[in-house]
Length: 166
Length: 166
Length: 166
Image (tube, rainbow over all chains, first blue to last red):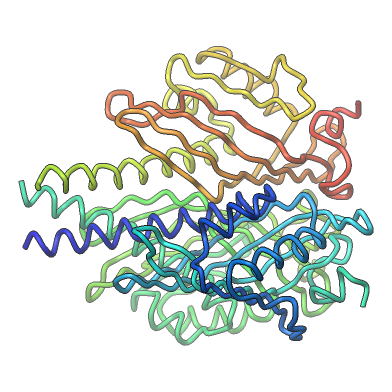
């Protein structure tokens, strides 16, 4: 009976810790603290996949700390300045020392090349693993729904075309 | 003493499950999975009331699975395409097998007739009932604060007038 | 062993109650229920600091119920009408009867002088204290990232300059 209580308590704690991890990710990305982000939030073998639905691949897929750091410093930080991004609608499923979640994200930012206000939104599909007692991203897949200058809004052009002018 | 622990644990689990239900609703509505939405998220006798503050009634009030499905397929899916909507600021009160909650929602969408970007926001006032161990909406009342083309923003016209041109 | 369970359960309940407090704050501010807000959400000696990064001080720093009430009725309610504001990305740390949290906020509102749609975002850095069994704000520090007419977006002018025309 005590075991049942402990199991349920642990599950609630896991869900809290995964939500904290999702929040911490936003703080560290928006503050440009990429070394800390990669070292504390991702497993050694983590994989990030941020392709948009039209599917430009490299360099939007990265595996391992070194490539993930290069993705954040070389792509995210270059395309989007003054980012403010938030996660919503978390759905979380924990199974022992692994977990999965899907949630929405929204962001505002400044496009450094044009000075435009950028709005974006999409969904994260995540996998997590407990490492040394702490939950980390093993996979973060972003399905970008839209990302474009505010003046264009969210109906016209997908991510890279809007930001790079392609 | 054990009973006290079990009661408090159950309450925390209920709150988690209600938040998951609120999130699931957004995923299923935005993905147009209305059959699944109605079958799994609403009690048989559920009631949806989405009147705006100016109060056009029919067809914005629906009762029971059949009417609720007709509301989503015949009104929501017609007025708003590519919807992306999120819930925030959840306040939840559980009492045994019933519960109530209020929260904010925000959405972006595309107006199919004009191609305009639409922004909307409001509050949900919900009642829930536990059915076969799972929480479901018994009532979802939307108080729409604004819903209009992005270019108009949120100060001018309320819902239907903005979207239908009335 | 039972003590360990009770301690962990209490921590989860504390986190829930602090999230409810953050949500309640949004409801009461947006509904203009400032007397209730101050009386139920803030400790007697609470301090609010809403300076923007450029640092105009008075009257954006208030201490104690009387000054905080004056801040909400004399500044917030004057600068921003029809406010709709939401909190996101909560990070919460509880230690006994005190706690701290950081989170993001976003808001939309109407600028009463010009009729403009206003968009704003920033972060709250909070300290809480448990008073008579209920969590309250002991400090709420807002770091405003942007707050400006929608047509200007979030890249041009900070808070007061945008809203007051300075």
